[in-house]
Length: 90
Image (tube, rainbow, N blue to C red):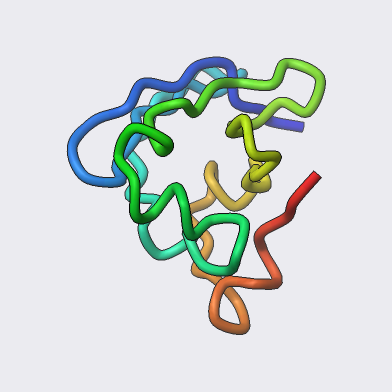
């Protein structure tokens, strides 16, 4: 399984992600930031910028408990059902 190993915040809602398979990708997270748990991240740049890698989960997380499936990030999968099926909250 490919997991996220690093994250760097770029402009807007873009992040540069490093994956355990050695690839790096720039991903625009804006389409994924839907639902109540993501609302503060979408509206407040300072909150969005608190993103980090949870090594146990192997993906990006925020202090409010929001996270995004690493397979979605790696394969640039489109949000399903207005973004709710591919997103999770711990």
